[in-house]
Length: 254
Image 1 (cartoon, helix red, strand yellow):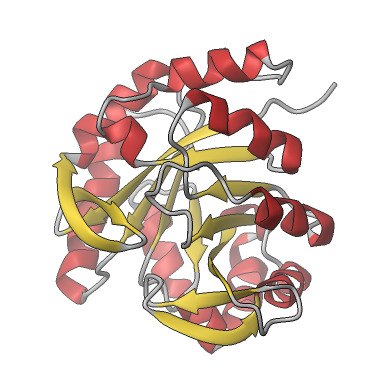
Image 2 (spheres, rainbow, N blue to C red):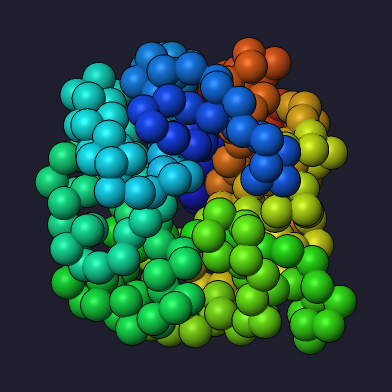
């Protein structure tokens, strides 16, 4: 029996509030993270992802509090990312209620961080977050970026995904910066390429605009689909997305 495809709302958190922009810019306030998380839990979300988009020392302390309060209200897996630089950071997030932790910039700067987290906590805890940008010069056509999409690297996205999986990453969160917030649909080429190289689950992120956008991402190879602004604004509900996936013959958790 095939595993059910997951629907995951994403909450980008800055200074204790949910924010959202387009192409990672022009952030605007979207509400209280605990209230939104509780609403998505009630709608049937399979998991929640929190990304601390500022990740300064003060914001990190705020995020610990947000995660703790959310874990007290919501009983589905929580993935938390942003500003994770050491295995001790992971330990602190798990202690306040995170189930999985996402790493991005710090792992690119020091790939051994992936090994350290996987060795200490297990691959099931470690989500490699990839903020991916199209780059014609890269052999796959895609490179990864750091610092919330603000810094483009020369690291090929597929090469980095393969290396991180070899080092112990248990899941890939693949966010298309080019599609992020545009509501033009997921980058299906990117999803398909990641599926080809990945032996672990792939989460597609970036670009969802309507219920019809989600099934193509699953068919392209995603194990889960993630969205933010369309949920926060009330344009879509988790239930509506699951109904559309089911109507397309895709197994979902009811």
